[in-house]
Length: 191
Image 1 (cartoon, rainbow, N blue to C red):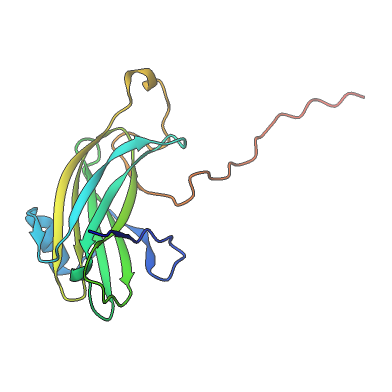
Image 2: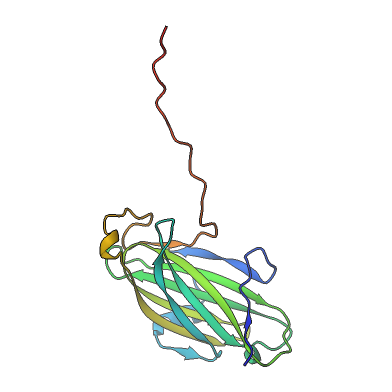
């Protein structure tokens, strides 16, 4: 079977960048019902694979998912896939963080193969529960949930991480952010 990967940068016309919706968003009733049910849905055929949190050079744990959908389910004159997910810390602040991501699907006549899409978020050390869904214009849903844990190994326990423990943040596109200038003391002038 042939695979087609659509890992399109945010600047491309097919993808709208991921957005954080905060901790208390106003959601569509159908989306909230699917998230609250906590049961897998497969009206829209898909397979979601959670990505284990990995520590990056920016001292953040990066986690997320790979989404795979058969092209036969996307055939037609175009579509929009809306991904909604919430990440809940298991301890600390119990308020979950919600995220939304949209993928515009171009007209597709191919019926063999799959499309693969990705989504990311950052977390601090801790355990988390993720409730996740994707739906299309026709109202077909695919949903899943999983547990994940971000933990430093014994050699790295002394590191100071960028994201506090039990916290969830939107993933930044640029891994190497500019740093502010270093403030230095000026030497006393000698006369």
